[in-house]
Image (cartoon, rainbow, N blue to C red; front, side, top):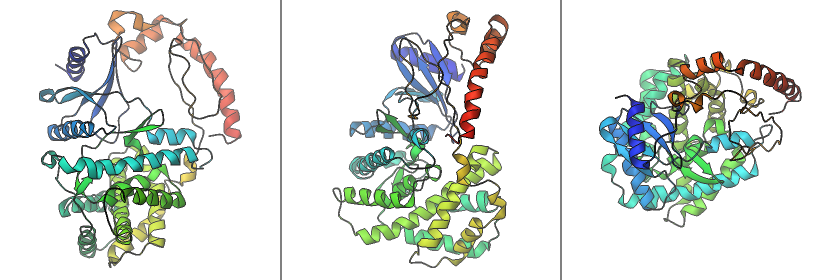
Amino acid sequence: MNIKESLLILFEKWSGEKATEFYPLPPSGSYREYYRIKSKSKSAIGVYNSDAKENIAFLNFSKHFKSHGLAVPEIYAEDQKNDIYLEEDLGDTTLFAYLTAIRKNGEFPSEAAEIYKKVLEELPKFQITAAKDLDYSVCYPRSAFDKQSMLWDLNYFKYYFLKLAKIPFEEQALENDFHTLIQFLLEAGTDYFLYRDFQSRNIMLIKHEPYFIDYQGGRKGALQYDVASLLYDAKADIPQALRTQLLKHYIDNLKNYIEFDEAKFREYYYGYVLIRIMQAMGAYGFRGFYEKKEHFLKSIPFALENLTWLLDNIELPIKIPALWNALLKTTQSENLKKFGTKKKEYKLSVTVTSFSYKKGIPNDTSGNGGGFVFDCRGLLNPGRYDEYKLLNGKDEEVIQFLEEKSNVKEFLSHAFSLVDATVENYIERKFT
């Protein structure tokens, strides 16, 4: 039995209804596979992940956080023998997608800043409140963000970023500095839940309210790490002045949960900003340089800008000259400059969305108020035939049907003629 058949059986057993739609969601930075499954009245996200221990961590954490009233997806059903489960469908709007849609000419919108404040207000509920009775025995691959975890991240950066980007460094001196940095970071309090990948693509928005996903890598650790992950999320590109405001907002809210030395907190915070940036750059190197996934390389200019600011403005209370030198060479690398600057990211985005007239035309999240609506009901619809009902437009059978049995090519030709003229005009006027 294949993944699709297994998920459909699980869905129909849970929903009590026959599935009418089944299609894959775009791949992310992991090897997990996500599918949206719908029936007449229900919808769920089907997940396949061959890593059984990671599944156990996610399912346990989800149920635990839900019991504490936190905004995480509900787990509807699971079949751990087949490495699959069903979770609540939270839609398609991530915080990053929302931010990209409403951002104009690179300006960070005030409404997005307000959502970031909401997110930071929720974070201590994960880190402190729900952490008190969390079962850390299911954490994977480590139960704490300890020395070993940090060494993995730092070596990830060394081998998949520095080496592949051809940044010269002295191996032993760099290794010594890694241990110095780790010793410093572990001096911070680490008896909290560390979400691990707390960033804008792992936060969903429903009516401007945040929901949280992808915490399966969570473990015990320092409070500072997750704040650093969110505020120095490379492509979110939060202005430094706003980062300072948001950090203050988090710290002020944190005082409602625990007592702590704010000056010390901030000192360790920038150490965690550094290791988080290096971990992210390791991922960009592995996914981009090694696996040749171009969109990861597009994050490099943003990460370099964050790194440059850190090197210019922050002085940690430890001596790590070999690491500092390697980071400086990274920011000055001519080889990395070929990936362009962040300004190239602000280009015209065209969104194509399918919809049902019964449910209404999709909301324009960009705020531009423009666009085209094409009535496709005059085209022969393969979804009316039983053999195509569980397929989607990416399946070869559907593509062949549309090409051979409908006038879709002529329809698209007319649609493109209308849209192309507008797109060319908007590009000339530097719309985004």
